[in-house]
Length: 484
Image (cartoon, rainbow, N blue to C red; front, side, top):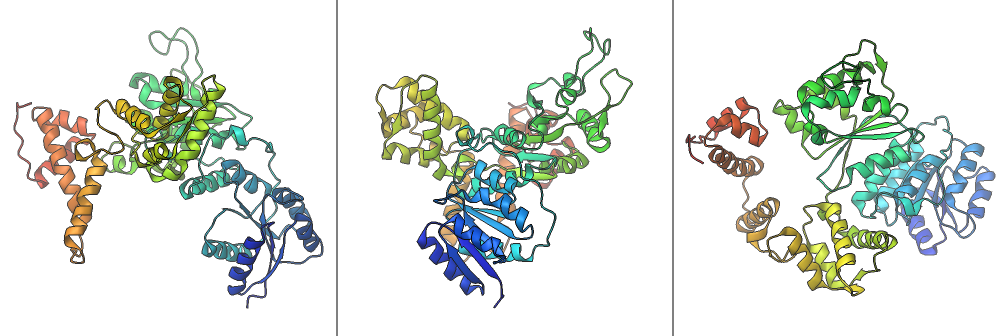
């Protein structure tokens, strides 16, 4: 037996019973109550070694208890559990001083591991609770209750009180800027500006001027001094979107700023102190770009202090109903008529691959609200709109092999491979084999498209020329020049 006592507060009797059994099997003594008042009486009496509390209880919000607990018994850890699985819940739990936040329903093994961590964690000074507004749920930038999104919420909540540099990875349309704005809006720099700069949208020759500003006469057309984005973001957050598109020469200057904490405007002589939290984002594989010499390794490690990977929508299809309700609510507030989907239409959405991710889903919601008079949208309309958006006339959710994406084709190939081999699989080498099977035709077709010009093919592929030459040699690819 551990000899430790866990105080559990939840107004659901069934949950209290399950937690009592699970924690009891782990060797803890468990005391349960259905009210915040009952929990507080035990805490005032000095009882319990750990608190596990729900957020919504009949007499008081569990989060409101935490500052009082920290003041009276600063070393008593609190684990918060809640069915209100939103970013704001996670942020409020962290800001109020909870040791951990668990979204219901949760795995009992996860709870047991969290309890063990909380009881063994060293005691530390209590931080002052943050000042968050209690009724911000409707303004939340991130929607979804899937396990993937819950992990994102927990990560963001832990980062809110820091100035750590964050890099957000994810496909286009997954909401990278929304995450960056959430980190700013709920973080310690929320009183300062949020300044965004998209590297992919800027000409190479203007990037340094945009970032660091310029002095009068620094170049042709510089008729006066201009503040750069670093200066504009002072005291706040600088969001560098599509950081993978930053040219190498600009990467060198950005690295110097991150290392030294200061920069010089283009044409300037005096150093300016950098006072902005850096959040970067990209849809590219920066690690692979580093290996190919397209991104500085030292800058990669400076930016990648805390990496956050946003899931593609196809990885969290259980969030689609909630997302659609949210988007329909938004467009209704903009003056469009109310809409909802029937069960078959929703199933069609969940079967779609969503190459454009959440952005594609939002665009669909707007089209459905704007173009159709009926309040309830059915499956046929949804499939027609998805097909029209693709521009190929093929049924999007029921597409066969002719309309599948590359990832779908690879997945289909691997499923056939595993079915064919059954239990007689090769010992190793499948990963390299699949890479070679995709890599060879990709290089051959790129060479064909550029008439055998290896310099142009390397640029098309995003590879270093020497890297392409080595791959051509290793894969024994015949280069035929002059053909297109």
